[in-house]
Image (cartoon, rainbow over all chains, first blue to last red; front, side):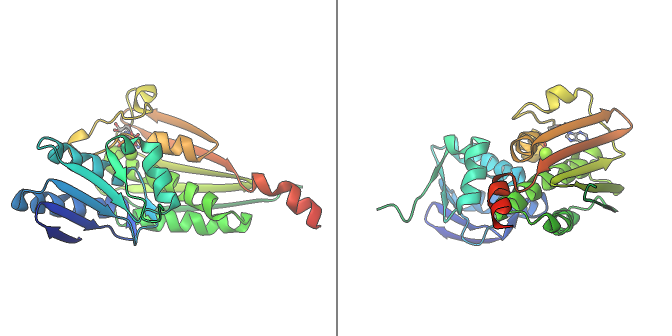
Length: 104
Length: 151
Ligand SMILES: Nc1ncnc2c1ncn2[C@@H]1O[C@H](COP(=O)(O)OP(=O)(O)O)[C@@H](O)[C@H]1O
Ligand SMILES: [Mg+2]
């Protein structure tokens, strides 16, 4: 898993395809990083991602459950139209903000 | 006469094959000249059904997953079958957010996605025998008028 930690903020650079196969590793490694660095904010970066199914939704919801206990937040950045559709349809946008970089 | 075609694949229930299954089905679908959106819809639905066979049907034991695709004119049908543990209550399983594996971070949105991205979804399941998921989608619905005119 590619990631970056800045203070209490973790950015996860998601792979091209976020399915059950890839989600396992992200889940495991993200939890270790969150635990070690007292992470409060998580940014899911979809820059490279063109496929995600409900396993990805499970990864986001699971990480949110961990950090919401300490008042944390989850964000999505660089999500293309398809990813936004998946996020919206799943209802995960109720707990996650989508950052619109091109908003004027 | 109807334009028909069929293909079948059988592969081991390893998570690495989820990507293979999506690509194999998508490439068979290509002959219907689908839009990018239609390909993405079918790939998502297939991914959900195959993942379910692997993690719920076989509970990560290695057995065979079977996919059958059929084309009849512009209607695409895909069936995903496993001979795994089956579903006790199909109606309950299909509810959005329902999952029997919350500890594995399942979202319970698999059937909801299959329903949203395909035109129809049928689930046949028997505890101890296995599960068959049949999905259909008409391809190129929005293009009909345009195609007729261009001929
Ligand atoms: N092929 C299958 N074999 C056995 N049980 C299944 C199968 N597919 C789905 N299920 C059951 O239906 C439930 C809901 O499936 P789904 O909507 O994909 O959510 P999730 O996979 O996130 O649990 C699963 O938790 C499981 O109990
Ligand atoms: Mg599922």
